[in-house]
Length: 284
Image 1: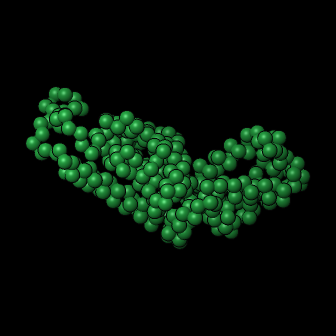
Image 2: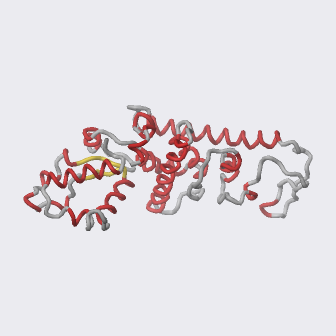
């Protein structure tokens, strides 16, 4: 899986070793704030470096709606494009569109073949809707980090998160950052995952390696299923993906994993469950 193939997705590589979640979130917010500042500086610098830049260029008068105050076209073409001029940019009109265009690939930004999801500038009315947005953001960040790593971009996870932060206007990280960062964590040893199960953390769930529905099959006891050795803490979004995998038909099994495992022993179910964790980049 992706996390297993890229060392920058390991906990040490992406979260600074043993730094706790609060420190990591503070560091991330500092990175995002710095990116916002640098993007604004880039916008200003691009304008000043334009060969045809004229501080006396006329602007559109008031009463023209969103065009009010914009420079009128003098017929010259500059190096920097306005947000609305970028046909490949889906962020026209959003609050941070001008910040995003500064790091869009066509303006010299990172080589992203897939744009980030369009994130509203303010939180949606329900937490469920916000969490679904966070899931789309987390999935995109993992794909983007993989693409950035392939072209030797330094700190690809942080770069992907910075891009998301500029697009989202930071509310997503303020309230739901744990959902995204936990999804981007790399594989951990089993004992660490088991230890994590004892402490709640935003954006994570306790996952049973042998499913709770197995109780009663071939003498499988509830106390075995609920034992600490059978519980690990994982990303909630990855938990959803694993649950979906267990319920969907798989050609190689000629059944869904849940049906395939019916009647298997506890150890057989456990071995299967551990492999699923490895395949999803959760277990080393």
